[in-house]
Length: 422
Ligand SMILES: [Zn+2]
Image (cartoon, rainbow, N blue to C red):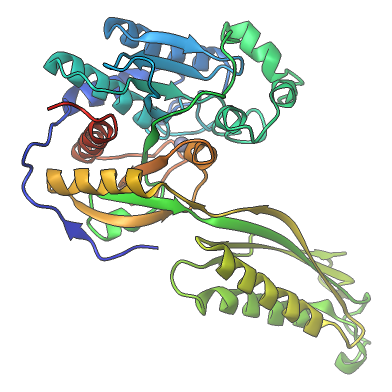
């Protein structure tokens, strides 16, 4: 979902980060777990993840930040505020990557948070609330399922013991992996308030680039629902069986899939339908199949619209039966839509305006740590364009000036929320 791109006014009173320093830190971080094709492989809680965390901590030590690590390895670097007991404004994202990931997914949000701290230190600006830069454990879910394990445990969505017991493909648990890299911290997981959580991230989609906007003001995250559609008929020989005597699930599947897309396209650009898996049994060229299965993925930012899409899908599947073909639809997973905190979203939008950047309101189509953090803290996200919308790919790329612009917005929104005395 997006609105018309807006261009803000002149950059009166807005501070800026050192974009060149941010870029250099990103490139230095990208050497840890670097792949041959310019990407990174830094799976959660591996030696590479440890290396990235150590590098981040070394930089934070230069900025006199206080480090704390919780029992699931979430890492927090704290810059004092005038009110050191008050809830911090947290700038967080992740340092783990996909097996063939890019240089910017996650690392950008963490290192931009560090750049905010560096800039405030060099300008000697004090904030009322403390600032923390957070590194959330296992965001990608590539080594340990589910994704967003550290932030989800922090937010109380996952039980700590269950999370520590999750195992990778080799049978190594999160607990054992944390011990091995020295990141099983002593701090309790969660249970402390944040004044705000801001996450800066590359868009991982094509909209900002298409609309020539520099900043995505992320107002929330799409809800997702997954279904399995199964149609069962009877096998028959492709030659001797006349069409009218077949119990063929394929023509019914064709009708159903057309309708699945109509359910989405009839509901505006914010609605998405994806059929990513289609299979037939016995999957033989000259046999009418016995069974056809298709997956359906529906997305929309509003639960009421998802409800309506689901109702339509269900009535469709009831109407599909007959003619000797049985139709069955089951919902197998759902993730509720998220609306970010209006005050945090406004702080991002105002910062983009003050800096004079073209910005768009967007709803994130991908999951992020902020989805879970929004359950326990006022939260918002900032997106910047990435080349061709490509992410989870070694070719992932973003422009230096856009990365600097996003960090400028992060800096000014954070100052606003941390109630700087200027
Ligand atoms: Zn990410």
